[in-house]
Length: 177
Image (cartoon, rainbow, N blue to C red; front, side, top):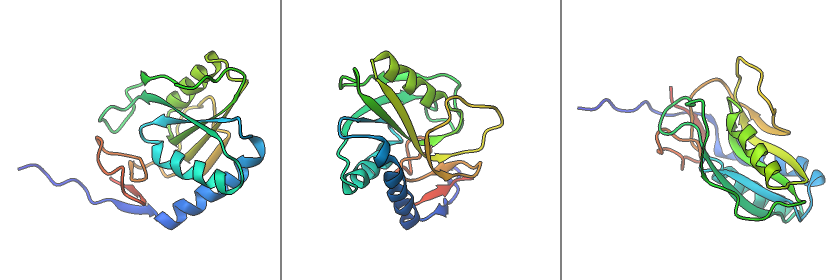
C-alpha cells in the first residue's frame, strides 16, 4: 500500500495571503499604467495573478492580461535546471510595459526566461513581481522588483503551488515536508 502524503502545515493563512496581495497592488499601481500587460507565468502563478489583477483594479489600475507557460519542475520537488516553453505570449508586447507575475522565486530561472521572452517580444520595460521569494545559496538574476513574502526554505503547496499537480487549490500557503 502507498505511503500517505505528509499533512500540509499552514505557514501563511488565507487572510494573510489576501493582505499581502493588497499591499503589493498598492506598491505596484504607481509604477504601471492601464496599457501595462500583466503576464502570469503558468500554471502556478495563476491564483496570484487573478488576485493581484483584481486588487490592482480596486486601486483604479486596469491592466491588460496575458500568460506565458513555462515549466522547470515537472512533477518533481526541485527544478530540473532547464525551462520548457509550453505556450508563448498571445498579446503583442511591442512598446508596452510588461508586469511579469509568478508565484514563487527560487532558482530565478523561470523569471529570467520570462524577462528574456518579453524583451524579445518588444516590451519597452519589464517589471517583475513574485508572491514569495525563497532563500537561495547562489546569486540570482534578475531579482524580482516586487516581493510579497519572504518564504522559508521549505517545500510549499497551496495558493497555486503544487506537489505533482496536487494541492494547488489550498487557500493557505503550506509546507509539505
